[in-house]
Image (cartoon, rainbow, N blue to C red; front, side, top):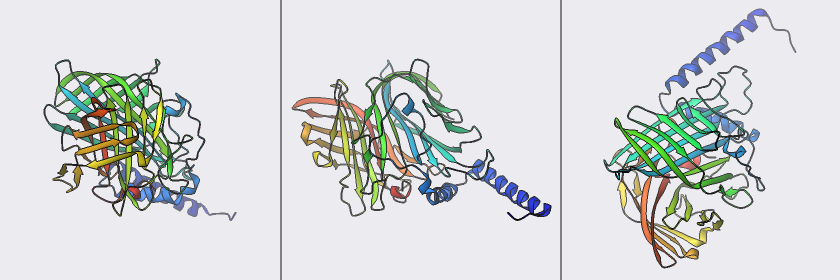
Length: 392
């Protein structure tokens, strides 16, 4: 190794300090999604260092409620339908995303960016017909955000999901005009989606994730909305998914349903939409019976047909807010409707994605018997750049 002069060393040190200072300033201010795209490109350059989701993964709980930092993409998704004793109804969403940027930062500084954490918070006030939403982004390493391994604790400043000593999920988040403080019990056992611990999303072996859900979590606590406190209870749904590359170039978005029927069964269905307007063959689902047993639903066994459409005045996107859901192999036919048309999230401050995610209700039949229930619907790829650009 060549011997460097003191001036060389000092010059390099000053350059590193300037870069670090600029990074601190940029991440504090986050003027737009530009920095996120820049860091995502860095993550892509180091893509070969991240672990790929492969068949045969053996889930263990509570270990796998925690973070999996060897994978590039990970999220913890909580949604639910809650009500007060007086009959006021609410939907909520609290979602934590971890996006790996550099698995092995060369800079030893705690300001080095290994992972970014983006978090979305939303409350749908059904009675007041108002949708409240906030998002934020921070990085791990300096304590502003992070996720522990071996058990659940993920946070972004004062927004947090964690397990307490009794194994209950505690959700807390405080924002300007809304907050939540909820306690969720597990309900049914975790349900693993896909085959051999793998939820395949594309033809390439690596385009997959490890994905499980807690599909019916009894929930109690309080919401604050527009200065008013509401004591609530109901049911939540938790998704946890991790992998390194999910989608392929031709896949522009997805439609995802979590449905809790009043007969005690739960249904997860998603279809991947391709650029040519067709449905991808890797679309799939899972039926969870009343006693918690799981059953795979393959792409050819169900149909999701859009009905009435709502046009967003801000993004111009056209979202189907009524869907006909038919699982032919199980005799299930539902009409699913949004409780409020405008449940669109524009996450320019964090993930840079525009998507629709909100509370739904439905009626229909199962094996000829009437059923009804509540759930959540997510629709991506209807506005902005294709969602596959974020998850490749």
